[in-house]
Amino acid sequence: MRLADRTRNFTSFKVVDYLQAAVELQAQGRDIVRMVIGEPGFVTAQPIVESAKQALSDGKTSYTPPCGIPELRQAIADNYRRGYGLSIDPQRIIVTTGSSAALGMICDLLLNPGDGLLMSDPGYPCNPNFVRRLDAEPQFVPVEAEENYQLTAALAASHWRENTVGVMVASPSNPTGEIISRDNLAALYREVADRGGNLVVDEIYHGLTYGDEHIPSILEITDKAFVVNSFSKYFGMTGWRLGWMVIPEGLSEIINVMVQNFYISSPSVAQYAALEAFKPETMDILESRRSEFKKCRDFLVPALRELGFGIRHVPDGAFYVYADVQAFTDDSEAFCWQLLHEHGVACTPGTDFGHHRANHHVRFAYTEPMDRLKLGVERLRNALK
Ligand SMILES: Cc1ncc(COP(=O)(O)O)c(C=O)c1O
Image (cartoon, rainbow, N blue to C red; front, top):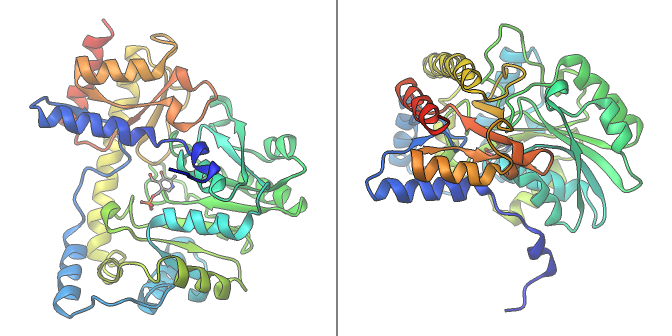
């Protein structure tokens, strides 16, 4: 069949391949410790589920306004006021079908064919494909453990090319869980803005941070950047396909046209359910889950270090540990397949997240309960004997 040339450039989301293999082994009766996918092990909090049931009973099953029901846009704005002290016009908040749709639409908005977008290597595997879909160029910037695997102003300056039109970062990041400090974020924004570019900040792991300090949103620094966020991670609603973006003023109309055409509206029941996500009763549940994740991180990082995995810095957020496996292998994919098939531990090879030292890294997700993580570590100990 004749397909568009660009389809040859799309790369697979390897984590899904490894998850699929884990699920198949489980179906055959094998017990697999799943440290593979970036999905909270908890089911969606009960108040959100109840709100969805109510929405269904009330017949809230139609299309909604393209950019989201006004109550939800307002609730997200209120959350920025409570959590960040920010006053954001709800017109700048666009509800989307997961942050995936937001990332795609921001690329649609910013990139012409041939334009370049800087992003870190390692980074979230889908981002380069949103760029390739537009016949534009993902421009990878290798980042090191020493700089917390994050893009800095200096790196943006040294990798900026003639066709570069912007930078996309995530803080906390997938796969490393590392954050960008307020100073670094401000300097990065300045560098990009001075070059006439746009900055996109993926804040999907906000809320899932484990230190005492406040994690800054780029919106505290400027209202000219693009922000992506989601109900998937902190709010534990991966399958509901609901996210949002905050866009600079003046773009609501064009975004409205794009959403109308691309998917009409986000799922109505999910939107009504999400109204419950910011309520104190739900937040209490989400905060106690966050403290479980913190316990898991605090167990896993020293346990992996003791086994010989290289982890330079304790990651501040998300639910990932990006571990150096040089001591064990030069082929992270083979290493992960072996761990899965022979030892019943599923994790993701660094090659899912880019090229830079990718064969020397593996990502562990600590989304399963503590007893399962402990079992996973015991299995790793046996595997590495
Ligand atoms: C950094 C990052 N951004 C975006 C997404 C997409 O999430 P969703 O579409 O479920 O909001 C993910 C999912 O793992 C992610 O890790």
